[in-house]
Figure 1 (tube, one colour):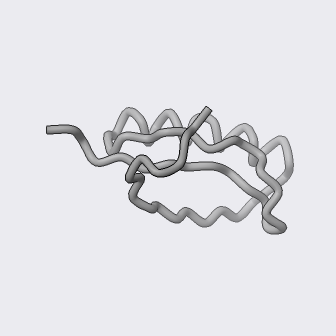
Figure 2 (figure 1 turned 135 degrees about the vertical axis):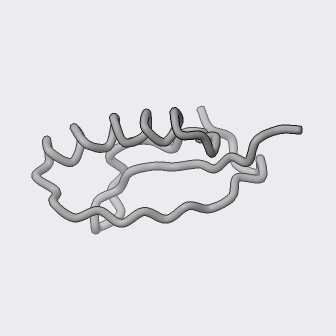
Figure 3 (figure 1 turned 90 degrees about the vertical axis):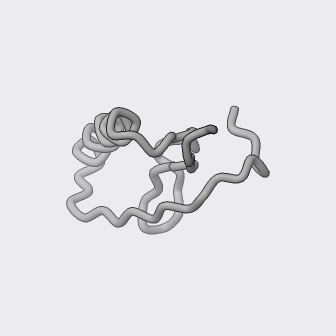
Length: 64
Protein backbone atom coordinates (compact mmCIF):
# COMPACT_ATOMS: atom_id res chain seq x y z
CA UNK A 1 0.00 0.00 0.00
CA UNK A 2 1.40 3.39 -0.92
CA UNK A 3 1.81 6.26 1.49
CA UNK A 4 -0.44 9.32 1.30
CA UNK A 5 1.18 12.08 -0.72
CA UNK A 6 0.61 15.69 -1.72
CA UNK A 7 2.07 18.41 -3.86
CA UNK A 8 3.62 21.53 -2.43
CA UNK A 9 4.92 24.79 -3.81
CA UNK A 10 6.00 28.05 -2.28
CA UNK A 11 4.38 31.32 -3.42
CA UNK A 12 4.42 34.90 -2.23
CA UNK A 13 1.27 36.79 -1.19
CA UNK A 14 0.58 37.84 -4.79
CA UNK A 15 0.77 34.25 -6.04
CA UNK A 16 4.22 34.46 -7.65
CA UNK A 17 5.71 30.96 -7.52
CA UNK A 18 9.00 31.05 -5.60
CA UNK A 19 9.56 27.26 -5.49
CA UNK A 20 7.97 25.09 -8.17
CA UNK A 21 5.45 22.34 -7.26
CA UNK A 22 7.00 19.15 -5.92
CA UNK A 23 5.79 15.73 -4.82
CA UNK A 24 5.69 15.13 -1.07
CA UNK A 25 5.04 11.89 0.78
CA UNK A 26 3.53 12.28 4.22
CA UNK A 27 6.66 11.33 6.12
CA UNK A 28 8.76 13.23 8.61
CA UNK A 29 11.79 13.18 6.30
CA UNK A 30 9.90 14.61 3.30
CA UNK A 31 8.37 17.37 5.44
CA UNK A 32 11.81 18.24 6.81
CA UNK A 33 13.21 18.39 3.26
CA UNK A 34 10.41 20.74 2.19
CA UNK A 35 11.07 23.02 5.17
CA UNK A 36 14.79 22.94 4.38
CA UNK A 37 13.94 24.44 0.96
CA UNK A 38 11.34 26.92 2.21
CA UNK A 39 13.43 28.43 5.02
CA UNK A 40 16.27 29.81 2.84
CA UNK A 41 13.78 31.02 0.20
CA UNK A 42 11.87 32.90 2.93
CA UNK A 43 15.00 34.49 4.31
CA UNK A 44 16.28 35.44 0.86
CA UNK A 45 13.05 37.34 0.16
CA UNK A 46 12.64 38.68 3.73
CA UNK A 47 9.32 36.85 4.21
CA UNK A 48 8.49 36.55 7.88
CA UNK A 49 5.04 34.95 7.84
CA UNK A 50 4.11 31.68 6.14
CA UNK A 51 0.83 29.80 5.76
CA UNK A 52 0.70 26.13 4.80
CA UNK A 53 -2.11 24.38 2.99
CA UNK A 54 -1.89 20.62 2.42
CA UNK A 55 -4.06 19.15 -0.31
CA UNK A 56 -4.17 15.47 -1.27
CA UNK A 57 -2.44 14.63 -4.52
CA UNK A 58 -4.40 12.21 -6.62
CA UNK A 59 -2.09 12.09 -9.62
CA UNK A 60 -4.11 14.50 -11.77
CA UNK A 61 -1.37 17.07 -12.31
CA UNK A 62 2.09 16.20 -13.58
CA UNK A 63 5.06 17.53 -11.72
CA UNK A 64 8.08 18.14 -13.90
